[in-house]
Length: 329
Image (tube, rainbow, N blue to C red; front, top):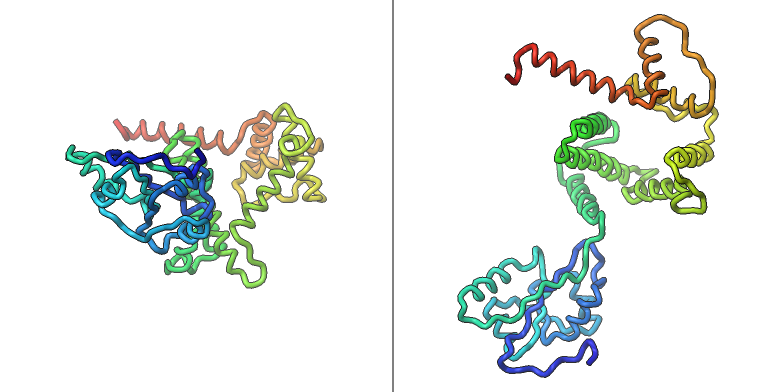
């Protein structure tokens, strides 16, 4: 018996209802093989939404689809004699219909057909990012505040969200971490959406993603190419070597943002100098700034993030202050 053959029916058989669900994030017509088998073997295929994106593709494939919305009782009756009825779900999966079927089954007076939920297409990992892009498009078009924002105007929020993300990581709060990652992701999508409107040099979130994908592949030849790396140190060597060829910088200090926090800036400069094998002595000048510079260089050499270390010390100091004040007792 092939996939489209039907077994002989018994008039007493209760039949079968198949609720076919699809993801709006997957291109219409890209259905699973079990879904196509079920559709071709069905006695009736129903869909309440005449504008459902799957309908043109189902009909082109020779599946006769009825634009009809049956009640639970009508659907049970349609399955009489062992028939299979497929309902192409709309929206959230036909909750009114499934609730009605559950009530019918609860009465105990109706011989219910077999009920099957069949996902015809699945979301791939990252599918909700498509939702974020769509939501951002609408907000940019319809929100009075969001529609007026610029890259410069949003810059401060990017800094704030990055700091809040770091705080969530250091506090070890998983719920806060998930939320702050979302806030940082929003900044990326928001800036990409604004960039689409540039009159001369537009780019989209796909260009942003495509750029970082290409960079990651190029800088990981030990993963995507023939190079080998068995330790984190070897991976870092690959990364720095590839980056140097890409950037072709005249100085190891090029590309270091001077607007970052001072300790982080000092540690980054020290890291570049050490990695390049340069011997550059620290300025022999007295002053708090130079003392902090020396501490940052020392921390970097010992594998310590000076910014994180200072924040940890500051939190401990804050707790001591609160204890002295009697806060929280």
